[in-house]
Length: 420
Ligand code: DOR
Ligand code: ZN
Image (cartoon, rainbow, N blue to C red):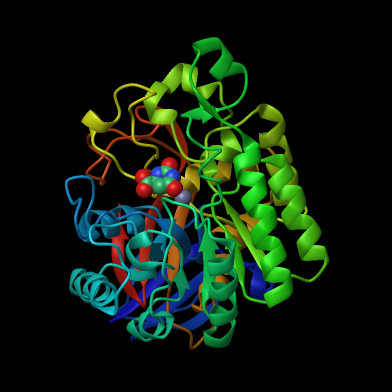
């Protein structure tokens, strides 16, 4: 089976590749890149005016499987992923039961392989039951296929356990991730700022995040364990990461597209659908994050796709935090390109090449390599609604809004897993 993607802008900044031409896929692998390739009997995809780049890698998604499959499951989540251009996703362990044993990790891998749309990697929990008391069996989780560990949904508060986790992770080459928000300081619902004062709603301040980011960077600096800060959202946290990167600590961080494009005022428009942890912050935090993209402090864009049912998103106080994001990551990232914050090449690093490196998965457009590719139209407008949404949930401020930039085709190891 041969697939010819014809006349697209083939872009892979890691290979210094930026060429308008053709790309041939045979037996799951890229077999030729060039101009005017003449290939009889190939399935042809006309890509004139479109971008062809390495498929995306999302280092932070919640698929709710096992246990809360009314919100999402491995199948609906995989469908959202490939429709968003992702062929590798790291799913968080705050499932029921938690991914804290090889058995649950193996369930995720087995079921996602049966579904066969994309690579689903489980993030194992750092502590048993994500309760923050006792470390899981890191070796067993690694052997079962977890490249990273986190208690996400909750922070790991115990500094001694985090130190031990980083030391062990260094020996086993695991990535340790943390949801950084001090649980004593994060009892409220939205950011401390204009909107919390206006609405009189209990807040969680950026200091809750900054304190744990600082602690985790310090522990990474001393232990040399790889520490990844999840959904970083505050200016000071970013400054802390920048400082420790300069000192040579093996720290990395991700930012959610919502924190890059919205500030706390979005809560006034979208209500509970704009509630997320850590919360949307002030405009000056958002501006600092844009600087962090430019100067390379931020390693990747991760969606934190967090589906919740309608009945769980009624009032700001009672709503579960989180937003779906797999299908909207590309148009949101392209918005940053259109605004001149990042280049298209940089976007490919943030959505694909950098997160791939953190997880140890391969990406890149090179002859002989597996064809993990996305073809998208940066100009195409579309709306996320009942017809286009592939998630079981609808919790996003972007519901019903016009989005610019659409995935047209996604290939995973040479197989067309999405074709719009
Ligand atoms: O907003 C969030 N939602 N933040 C988290 O850390 C967890 C996530 C979820 O699981 O819904
Ligand atoms: Zn989190």
